[in-house]
Image (cartoon, rainbow over all chains, first blue to last red; front, side, top):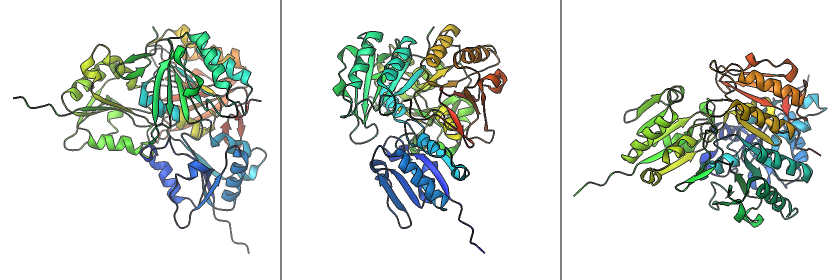
Length: 249
Length: 249
């Protein structure tokens, strides 16, 4: 006679941009019920330690290892929560976990849930006003997982169809030129007067917000903690706010 | 001698897609501190009445009147919260409030804050898996405020650059043909095998989720409570989930 395994679960949870006031009750409840928290070091650092909870912090760029480790623990019967900043489905851990399920019907049968969070572009937009108040695109500028040509083609397509845009991961030390090139493409496609907002570390004590015209924008205005929002052709200032009108008539 | 006016505030708050577990503590605190709640009837109906709180529910398509009424009350010293479903900055009330600030420096000087919420496309994506796990566009299919040609041009541009897409307000009784036309455009641009997810009333008791191929999709699969998500060329099933791989290499 064998003892049946406990039923494990895996939640892929979004912690929002930083402020505890922006964490949903659903995510808070999942963390309270967890036996194991898995994630990138600075995100796991946001979880309060307590007896019965094991924290598994790992470095950046090991998303697949992290996903498999979490699935393995859930298969053992643990209550596992993978934490991402922002929303787990936007340039974060959810896609990595589903990739790790490929060819693993045993893991596919687990109780797996994605718990949404406040993603960085929407927290940044809220601080600035409503720059994403009309149709918009979200583009990851990291070229770790896609060619620079595809990034440029998407920026051109979005600008050509007059979408507002939000850029994640605009700049890192390992690829300092990508974002400068994107700014060039935008300047050609949108002209120097288009509004661009650099929102860094939104909702944390280090938050900064800067809106300039494209003609004044420089690559140094962004780093990896920055979300960049580019307005569409109608985006404008009103008082201290930036917004994109609802109408395109 | 005149009595100074009390300092009014206006919060433009996102209630998330429906489930109270998806309302941020920030929004809950703003509602608890409010004297007046303003919004579209079904959203105001989500706020519990209490002594000292006045609920101002209004019909759809009166966004500018609603924005001005809220600003007027805040200018009188009230603690006003405008409630939107989802995120207020995504096809909701924030842009209307900033529009109402045009030419009104008195209103521009008020304490106005946008409080982000879980927007419908991210709640829907979380239920389906991670269909927005790579670059994506959000497009409002309502043609109240923009010409149908612009909608079609944006859908073509997004499909041409291989973005995943999320569509808000896909279909209403007053414009039954827009969404059928969008499905035609998508079928031409993306082919019949592209995955499309219809997520209705996500996180409410009426929630339904349906993923089909574009070749099988019909306009009747959507109504005004539906968010539609179209994958990119790499979007696939794994087990019961739909996801878009992180890599485009």
